[in-house]
Image (cartoon, rainbow, N blue to C red):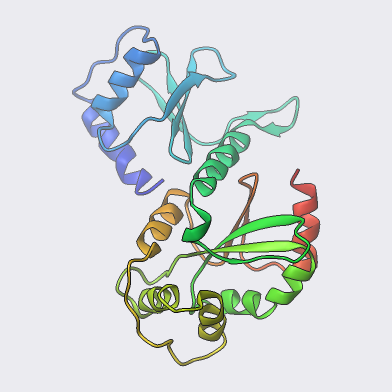
Length: 240
């Protein structure tokens, strides 16, 4: 979630002036959160595995809030008996929903001839490991992995990497333009058109992208960084 630390600091300050109710139901708690965290949109509130603690979904993030609206916890909840991360499953589901919300015509897709898996990759044209990964694209396709690219120029909007991403998107053949841009030190021909690069970046921020490449599976599991094709195929086989 974008700027979560700053938001939580604001919560502490605002919370000094907002009195929680004794025991809030979900609707009352939603109102409390709207007062204490006005910059955040609460998508859902549900009971957590711990009595007296609600699970609050905010985009692709999970927060835990006490039933009186007084205490907020950021972090993962673990079941020590089952040895299971209870929060990660919720996060993965939220990530998958966000990725699935992107229309296929808003991605650059390299489709495997015999598709077994799909991976969505946030990429930066100038990132070294992104270039290495794409130089091996035929190996991923041979493993049955369809690659869906979303742009995440790490240098930010209006950087050279951002301009390259826009130019690739606006090319007549986006797949060929992306391959050419990643395999050359020369920038692609400058082109401008309506493009989804800003939306890709916003989605990356929501999903907590900190570096590229960042891969997201169909189930919402994150694989950060470069991974060779055969190792990725093995990991995807386990992600079911």
